[in-house]
Amino acid sequence: MTARLPDPPRSPPTSTGPGSPYLNPYLAGMGLGLVLLAAFVLVGRGLGASGAFSSTLSWLVNLVAPAHAQANLYMQDYLGDGTTHPLKAWLVFEVAGVAAGALFSGLLAGRARFTVEKGPRVSTAIRLLCAFAGGMLMAFGAHLARGCTSGQALTGGALLNVGSWAFMLMVFVGGYAVAWFMRWQWR
Amino acid sequence: MMTPLYKYGFFGEEFSLLVAFALGLGFGFFLERAGFGSARKLAAQFYLYDMSVFKVMFTAIVTAMLGVTYLGWLGWLDLDLVYLVPTHLGPQILGGLVLGVGFVIGGYCPGTSVAALATGRFDAVIYALGIFAGTFVYAEADAPRGVRTAVGRRRVRGRRHRSPGLLGRERHRAAVQERAMSLPQLTLNHTSRRRNSPPGSSRAGRTIASSTCAPPPSSRATTFRRPRTPS
Image (cartoon, rainbow over the protein chains, first blue to last red):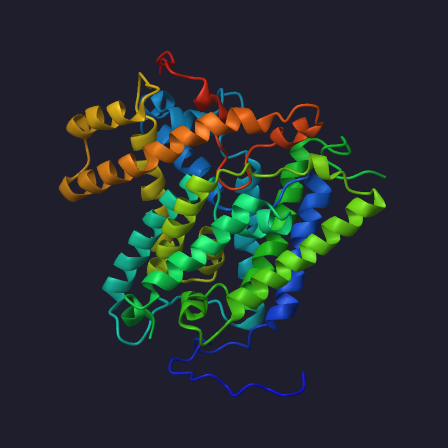
């Protein structure tokens, strides 16, 4: 930590509103890494997220239209044979923990509040529309690659999984490729 | 003592769900601590004025990697029993690209959206609804009722004419997505058989657990026709 680079231009503030400053990214990264390591040691698998969405969706569709859900090959995999509840899945519990842990941290730091994250130049309605579209794209991508940033990039990355590293690089390629076109949303 | 504890039978499935919740607590806590409950902080990575995503992500990867390596050397962690997502470069490259685009447009990835919606970000709630919608479209497109043919293209054509219940533009997008997906899906099915059972290796354990993020239904490769399940 000798010569410091000059601070990059900070046109929009990156900390949004009140609340204590964020944890040093390297410390937060070590924390995340240790949690991930604990997952390997305790259960022999990494962390994930998108699978919990699939389980929840299959459960919801099964509530509304059981015949439809049970005839769908994709949802069958998440519904199982009917002996266990579809929500009794590892990732569902893990993601419930993510929500609780994040809420705890947010309350502790005074960062939990009802708001919409967006740049100054975009209206709330457009931002929400983009969020929805982004969520849909994310779902397609996560299902194509069999995993999202947590399940593929983080978990597979730590295990030096070739496909996961290819995936991770492509996430950033895709992100940087469209970033310029989407800058009105964030800056 | 040998780990992973769960795979060595130190505790059962019920307890593993509690462990999942506890691990999730830690995961969510550090995600929020790092600022990943904020879409602006995450998106800043793509405009290079805040490199937190790189810093946090690669620190986490290196930390866990070092731990796995040393525990493996010491013989305390049986790496063969740690689940690895099988590598299929085609779908993973395409999926990564699509996901990256979705990241910049939506502002989150699935894990961080949960951290954000838990701390009151309404856009993350909408984003999560988008994930549900996308998963629903994917499920409907990829796994229609009744017959599954081995030839993805023919099925795609057939469904494009029928595809019920989807509105005009959605229908078109779904058809395009379908066509884009059917190819990697096929290669995926072909390769998974070969790679899942390397001869003479004791890696059977890797297929025990389902996939970490979006469990791959391995049965798909073998199922061409499934009987309709009575409701």
